Length: 129
Image (cartoon, rainbow, N blue to C red):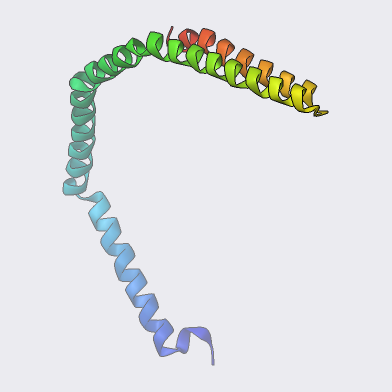
């Protein structure tokens, strides 16, 4: 049996033709042109209103608020580095007095942690400029 003789296929072809004709009529109508023009104008207007409203002011305020935390966070990071140094010093002392073999590793880890925190606290202001 050929494909075009199948009743379901024939109905689908009729539906497809009708849909294509309806789409062509709608596309050529003045209503569709006016609708697309109105949608474009609405999109541009809403975009301009959003850009000129409080969005820019909100970003500016957020930037100044975050920048105001710069100094306290930097000082906090330096304080954490000091705590790491104190705890590391006690840890090294106890390992030396017990005769452990990994004292050098502990010293390097402590110094590395302190240097990392101090370097990050000094680099923090560079992110806000």
